[in-house]
Image (tube, rainbow, N blue to C red; front, side):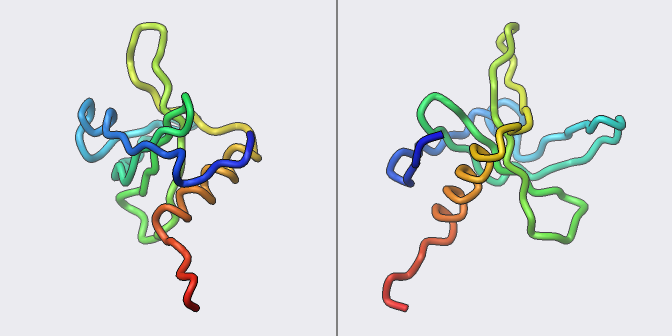
Length: 103
């Protein structure tokens, strides 16, 4: 993935419109967890969702890709490419915790 900047981001709310402010996800073991849909954004032609687990006191978030299935349904999938995940996580941090240049 090439270098991306906050100027390339378009905020979105497709998941919230479709599912509301929370989503339930099932992991590989069949365990279901509830997540707050914290943010959604688009970079280029790819959409991403930022999720925060409801029953976890941690402030660590998960970032997943938003894709449209062949049937036209919105789905969340893991970002398998480490470089892409790192770039998107850094971008989200930049968007939510901007650096103060006066420090």
